[in-house]
Length: 319
Image (cartoon, rainbow, N blue to C red; front, side, top):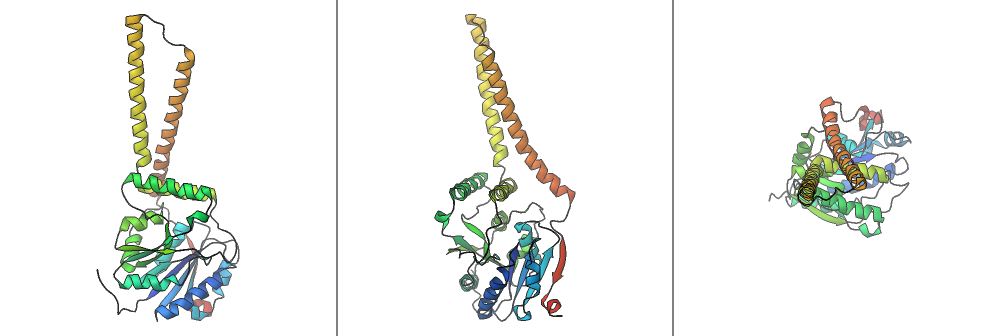
């Protein structure tokens, strides 16, 4: 493992923000304060993901000494794309992704940097307070990680989010991935590299509430499953094979019963119920196939993942 004890890296912190006008200034100032102690060369990139409040105006008004670049989207494209835009605009040897609401403690940056100096290329924070979350999130998280693990392609560390440090090699690898349906947690795991987790407990939100509704969480989880696992397709094949075998055995039983024992075939209720059941299963699996086809359709259209309406660098803000 490579040791980097004597290196003074350029650190870029990327901050996706959506309707965080009340929190973003304090978050940036706190991060900048800690970065001053870690490196003489650092900058911050705030990605305004189509906020409807004054987030962009607040970032524009930050003092030049905070060395903060604003990247403003033309509309809301989602956090996964805001992170991607941050990676594309990051200039540092190291890139650290943090939330705009202040829940990611800047005090952990020193520990992350120390792990990087020990030779790790990715250092991710692992959440320790899942027990305080709702039952929906806890059970949903368990089901999601179980579904991903059944696919067998990648291993996503449980309870590891976007709060992480990435070496430039990792950033370049992530940027080389061309897909438009981006699920960053899966992409972090897919690129590999020497990684290590450190425990953390999120701080209370300084203002507002989470922008992620239950529906958005379900959509994100489904994107992750369909992007990094063929488990739904294999499940459909397994269920289809099982039902076909059962139907064949039952059909054979009916024929033998009729030919050799001359007994009447059971009535219509069983037949109608069976037809409705098999039709429902077929429609369900056609829907699963449709989801994968929709992903392919999105990719072949070739549209950009997001549109940047404005980029304001510190010298632009000062002028």
